[in-house]
Image (cartoon, rainbow, N blue to C red; front, side):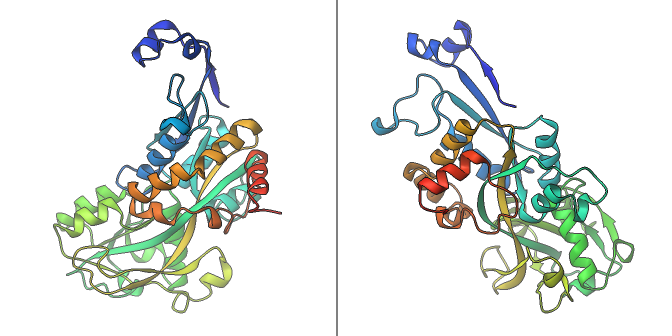
Length: 335
């Protein structure tokens, strides 16, 4: 649940908020669970947090100030990714978070990786943000040209609680492999990249928008390759898991990888709980799609350009939060 505080004088002074109006206004704190700092969730979360925030005392939107929700202070928190964010929302320790479309659907319905666990039936969507590409990064000298070549290799599947780990297991299965066929490790992307620099890791999976910081940094220092993944080669994976879509990481995205690399993608979605107030989520959704936010997305991150209102409902497989639904209906994006 959101936390509301009457700011005391010391806090107001620390924030530079000394007017009586600022002192009288409630502050609402709203957390956004993201992923590791080396991925895409974290910087995108920071952009969104800035866009929807409007602390007491801020200049008005039409006067060049914040266009966020009055009194709202949002923050992006580094976290373990999709699964961990959904669990935190369900447990009430996060107000919202980012999750892959597959993970959100499984959690809400109690299927897939949530089979046998209580369904997160209060999970609600605010928006679909952008496609997340499955990266399979390999050392250029590791002799890995296809997913099948991972057999016997040291491969990081990402850390427990991440959506990447879920998808890595599905991809291996689609290509006729299992964790038992590889030397599996479970590390964050930046940790896996460090191991690859030292020659102690052959490949690692990462699901996120490109360019991913950890991969870009690695590619600037060490010769890598991106391993192709496709629906055509992954057995019945795409038929069995329809949230996967064919995707391409353009050549030149990462240093030394000149050719386009076919892969799969899932949607990155911003989710919350049905327990969050309708008026708050309505205001947040409205601020998310404000024209000033558009400018921040375009300038703030390469993936920000793909966060667009016309795809805000694409691939959303869980109910919208009533506040978000109200905004989309008013905006003519939902009947």
